[in-house]
Each structure stands twice: as structure tokens, then as C-alpha cells.
Image (cartoon, rainbow, N blue to C red; front, side, top):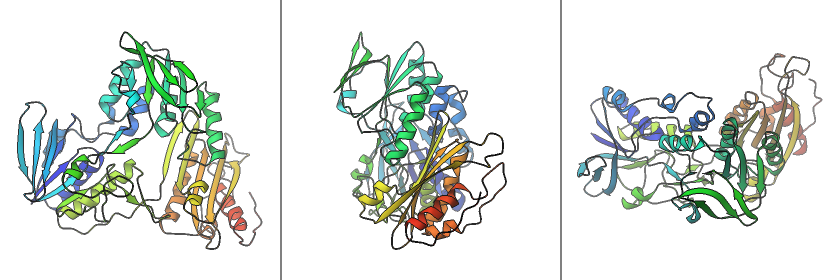
Length: 455
């Protein structure tokens, strides 16, 4: 069995490793267009901030380490074509300049995603960056040296993490966001405002509701962002307005895309072309709460998809279980987490949803260092179904979002969360954890029986 994987980061290396374990007799080859494999891209902002020492710390496995495990990794090799009828690939060696034809029996397309670069960003000016891979990180860190002002375009996950990172390096930072608030695709409006207040408290200027029109510079280096409200002077620009799935290779192979614009796959990570699988940030997935196909590219999703594909390419029968849209990040002293659907997302789907907001402390209020935590919880009227939750608080405290995520994964109701036996001791929680308080208030909002609360 000749298994070929295109893409050597999260999904690709997970698939290759699982295929090797499942069928030790298979030939497993990985083609990666870049120079590194198997690294944690989510750690890039923390290297730039100086909280992680160097980019090498993010590399989990090197090509040589994977070769020692029986996986033939070929870096700086770009797959430029697929012939599914002949089951061959055209591979270009970026170092030698030669192209060869490679056969396969099973093919995994794990080409990931690329940062969105609008036309106005394609200027060639020095000091304009995206942040997706190690090379992006190295280039951005080099630009930070000598810079005094930074402009981040986009107020999502990466933009907010980078605001902290660049402030840590002593830069004056401005976030420019097209929408009415930051985190527009992550949180409901009330929590967006709370998040913005935290960012501004740490000296970041946030300007929302404007449009970027151009980047301008002097002597080949960026000096300003031209917006609908006038210029913003800067020495450094980070473009963080989202990513797009890399689907060109899949489309060249005749693979269908879904309504999200990402590669359509079934639960076995199979495409609609025989022998061709796909996994990772180039794929859509089924949302277990909404039942819809969605495009939410995150690290665990990519790794899990790759694992499923690796099993199935070697004759096994694994299934990707879907996602519930769980995400978490930190900006300055605030941890932010969400799972399932927000109120706005539920309403957009036509669901009869209601939400409650609860403010409490992350552990017993009389215990030292008790800190505020906010929970917004959403459920469905009529069915009592739990739909989602958003948490803001100390970074360690919002990880309790996983309790809600686990219940969403099995289709639980608000009553199920309220009845959950959660751990309690004063250093960790109030007697009635904030999740239980929120669940009780939500079930009453949805028409359930009220229960007295004690802390």
C-alpha cells in the first residue's frame, strides 16, 4: 500500500503517524512545501511576545525523527498536480527545480489554509505581515526590532493575541476592526464589549467600524494604514482578518467543495473521488449542535481528522465525530472561551434561543486571589437543549468551558448541566460553580423549575 500525504503539519503528520502504526507494511510518504513539519503554529504569538524562548521550541518532530519512524518526509517539495485516474502526483522539488511523477494508492490532501490578503495588502512594502507559519513568525519578529508603532488589522483570535504580544515588546498598538466590535465572530455583543475594555485597559487603541483602503510607505517600508476615517501612522502592520482553505489541489483532483468553500468530506475523511482523502484546515466539518457543515479551522480538529484519515487509508474504520465550535484564547490578563452557538448564531439559524449572564468568582470569594468570572449561557426554548456558552475570566478559570463542550457533544440539555456533579473545594470553585448557577438561571428562563441557590 502506497500512502501519500500532501502537507506535513497537524493533519498530515497525524495521518502519516497513524497510518504507519496501523499498517507497518505500508509505504508512507509526506510531501511538505515548506522547510518544517509538525510544529505548533498556535504558539507563534508567544514567541514574539518573548514568553516562549524561540521558534524551535514549537517544533514537535523534525523530518529526520519521522524518517527514523519509517515515514519518508520530503520537505520543500510542492505537489502541483493530481491525476486521480492514474493515481499519480506531479511533485516539484523546490531545491533542485526538478519535477517528478509519484504514484499512490491512497492520497491525503492536508494542504491547510492561508491568511486572507486583500488586494490593498499586496504592496511589497517591508513591515507588512501575516502570521501563519514559522517563517511568518521569524519575519514578524525581525520587524519588531526598531519599531515603535504597530497596527493590527482584524480583531479576532490572532489579532487580540498579537495585541498582547506587541505590547509586551513595548510597541504602541492600534487594532483596526471593520465590524462594530472586536471578536465579532466569537462572542455575543455584551462579551465583545467586556473584552474590548480589557484590551484598552492595557494601552491598546481599538478603532471599530472602519474600512482599510490602502497601505502606504516611504522608501519601500510601510508608514501608514489608510482608512475610511483617515490615516493611521505605523511602523509595522499585522494582517489578521481570517484564513481561507487551500483547496486548489483538491479541486485539480476533481474533489467537490462544500457550501463553506472548504473541501467536502464524509465522516471517514473521504472525498467524493475514490482513493482521495482530505483532513485539516482545508476541510469543513459537521457542527453537532447546529447540524450544519461549518468551516472552523482549529488545531485539535486538524489532528483528529488526520488520525481518522490515517486509520481509514490503511483499511480501518474510524469516524470523525464532528465539532461543537470550542475555542479559547488569552489576551493580557483575560481568558476568553466559547463553545456551541452564541445567541446571535442561534437566532441566525432560526432557533428559539435564550441566554442568561452570570457574574461570579472563579473560586470561593473568601479564599485568597478569588477573581471575577463571567458566563453567558444559551439554550433552546421548548426542547431545553443546551446550545452554548461563553466565558471570560482569569485564563486558568475559563478552561471549565470544556464541561459545556463535553455535554454539547452528546446533545445534553440545560437540565443535564445543572444536575452535573462538578468538583468543589474553596481553592477551585464556589459550592455552586458558576456553570451550575448559569444553568439554573437558564432553565428557569426556558421555563424549568426554579431551585434555590447556595454558595
